[in-house]
Length: 127
Image 1 (tube, rainbow, N blue to C red):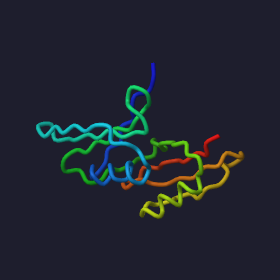
Image 2 (image 1 turned 60 degrees about the vertical axis):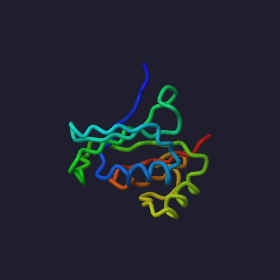
Image 3 (image 1 turned 90 degrees about the horizontal axis):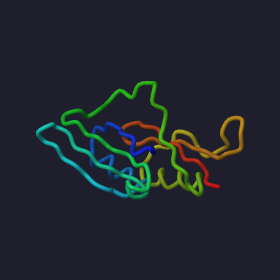
Image 4 (image 1 turned 120 degrees about the horizontal axis):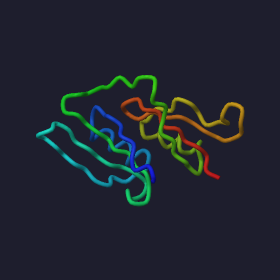
């Protein structure tokens, strides 16, 4: 068994695809449009779906915003340099919500940014 993807509901599919591809450097892997069922999907990731878990971005027609709730935490991404990753996000107009620094009670360097819908993305320093 393996994890295939995590689905995130988004308010503007193109805006979210731009964030994940242009700001976070993922590839747009495939899209599906289902007008009869009133939704569209975009799958993004750093590798092909047969080799890595990816994100499924789901846009339901007519829904521009979702309540994120308190159960979902974040998506974690390993990066070679957390500080630089934050600078890159900020330079491209993204929002950094926790600057690079050690995790509470540890030494691993982490940071948090938000996607356009408010989902938290954690950057974790690669080893």
